[in-house]
Each structure stands twice: as C-alpha cells, then as structure tokens.
Length: 424
Ligand code: CTP
Image 1: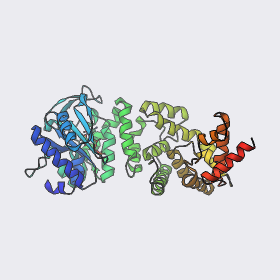
Image 2: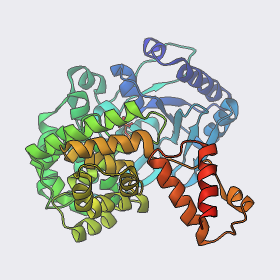
Image 3: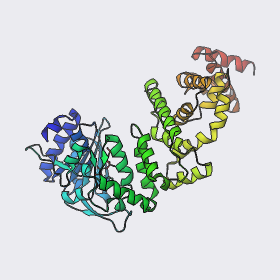
Image 4: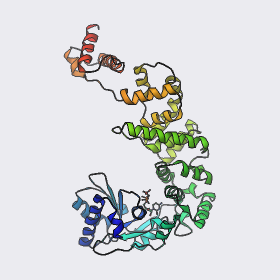
C-alpha cells in the first residue's frame, strides 16, 4: 500500500502521517476508506480524505485537529467530524458503524460496529475497502468483497441483492460511478437496479436524498451521459414525469459546458458559477413555472438556488427580445444583466446563437459587471447635498455616464457631480 501513499500530494501524506501518530497515541485503529481509497488505487486525483476509526472517531478527530491546527466540526449524533485545513483540504472522520434498515428505502438505524461491519453496509465493492494508516508496517488492503478485482476489471457491483431496495439513491450512484470511470455495471447488479426502478423504490425515498445524488451527477465532468442513461432507465420520472432528455438536451449541455469553461478561463477571480445549477435549470425547460416551483420545493433546494432557477424562466423572453436588438446603450445592457446571476447569464448565453446578444454579454462581463463609482456620499455631503432621494438620482446619472465612458475616474466623476449639483 505504501506505493499508493507515495503518490499522494505532500500535504495529504503529512496529514496521514500525523493521523497515524494520533492512532498510536490514542490506541484507536484508523483506516482510509471509501471513495478516497478507491481513487488512490485508481490513481485519480481526490483531495478529500475519508478516515474510519474503530472506537471513537470524535476523540480521534479532536486530537488530530489539535495537531494539524485545523478547524473542526463535530456531528455528535452521527459519531463523525470534519476537519478543514487551511488550504481547504477536507478530512472526514467517522466512527465505524453498522446499519440496519427498519424498512426498505428508509434512513438506516445506525450503531457502532467493527470495520468489517462498516464495509458491509456500503454501496459497491469498489467503495467497500479499507487500509490501515499505521505507517510502521507494510499494510494490506482490507477487501472482503473483491473491490480490487472489480476496480481492475472496471465493474460496479453491489454487495448483496437488497442493496438498491435498502437505499434506492444507489441507483443514481451506480450510474454516476460507471460513467465517471467508464466502468460496466455488472450483469446481476444491473438487473437488480432495473428491478428496483420498475418496482418504484425511488418514490419511497425522501426527495432531499435524491436531490443530493442528482446534484452530484450534475457536478460530474460530463453530466449528459449519466442523465441520459437515468432517463432511459426510467429513473428520472421519479423526479418529474415531464423531463425530456434527447438530442437537443445533449446539444444544450455541450453548449453550457463550453460557456462555463469560457467564463472560468476569462474571469478566474469572480465567483465561480455553480455549474450543476445551470444544468439543473436547463433540465427543467419542459415544465411549467408552477410545476417547477413544486419540484424545487419537493427537492428542497435552497432559497438562493430556487431564485436563480426561476428568475431564468421569468426573464428569458424579455432578455431575448431586448438583447437581440442592435445598438443597445451600455446603461441598458447594465440594467438588464446586472440583476441576474452568473448561472442565468451562462444559460442564456448557451441557449442563444444571436451575435448581438453574445457581444452584449461579453461586454457586460468584461466591462460593466460590478462597476462601482469612485465618489461616495461624503463627496455629495461636502457639496451641501443632504442625504435623501437626491443622492440616488445624482449617483444614477454618474453611473450612467461611467457606463457610457463619459467619466472614468474620481476626478471626472467629481467634476460631473459638481455640475449636476450646480444645475439642480
Ligand atoms: N456510501 C454508501 N451508500 C450511499 C452513500 C455513500 O455506501 N448511498 C458510502 C460509500 O462507501 C462511499 C462513502 O460512503 O464511498 C462516501 O460517500 P460519498 O462521499 O458520497 O462518495 P465517494 O465514494 O467519496 O464518491 P465521490 O468521489 O463522488 O465523492
């Protein structure tokens, strides 16, 4: 296993070495588990560490946080904790546990368990392996279900026949992993997956859990393929029966992906757009506004996310007709686009081939977006203007002049303010 550890970035190796020390001091056996071990074996970059502790994960996390001087979030009820390191690296620590499903598709009842029991409760063989992080001896991978073989031959396989009924969100996960790694879903697993869909088990899951898996899929590098596959299997009808995944969805997803890449390349310092939200909004196109609102509340999207989705559909017609015109003034472009989120702007841009439109969007993002004045209230106060509606009027005029390129810096803004106050 040491050969795999060697491939990790230095920072992660340091964390593992400190964790190994804590494991020795506290006598709490610690293991790398789940997706992080899977990716380590595959040689895929994964900057999060998942550590499972036999005994008490929270005590372990407290010791490790002290050593690493990192911040610590504790979830007492679940026996888990998350360390966030200064450079954003995340270490998830969990007490090993066993899970029992009181009935299919319910949240499991959780109790402490051995490492073996912890591996047994997991979704797929490739995610059900562990390796001790003790560095004093050569460690073997603990692999009770043949995960290494499945990794080597590119197979997604469940651990037992009831896996998709216990947790139907694994239907989404199976498709996501198989597309991400270009793996095949093993024959029997695929039959069980199809059976779980046709028996309607997804309808019994809390929709918030489906949202989590849907978002994870839309965050993938290429979300179209897994979404299409889920659509073909009939799994998306549990989100909405109106969703339609076809050739035009493929083209739209491609165009969105290009726009997002363009945005990130050209505006690295801006807030990075939530790419999943852009794809999600695009998927809702066949729904009426009323159905969208219903779905959004059923899935439990946050307020800000819901607002961005809905505002796209509310503004779309107005935006297309206004922005397709020739010769819009900068202040008109500004007032149309400034209230919109980057996600909305990206989606509008991805859906329209109109050249004027593209130019306005580029001008907006490159020049006008977030444009601020150099002058402020005290400058107006200094000229004897009392705070009130007059302030706003003057500032709006100066901003328009700035958008039109008539003033450029504090000096010219001040000159204009003086003139406006004089002519009042
Ligand atoms: N897991 C599971 N069943 C689920 C969700 C998670 O068994 N419904 C287990 C899997 O062993 C998984 C681990 O919990 O590896 C961590 O889950 P998560 O972080 O969602 O997945 P990762 O495998 O880390 O995948 P990703 O690379 O997408 O983060």
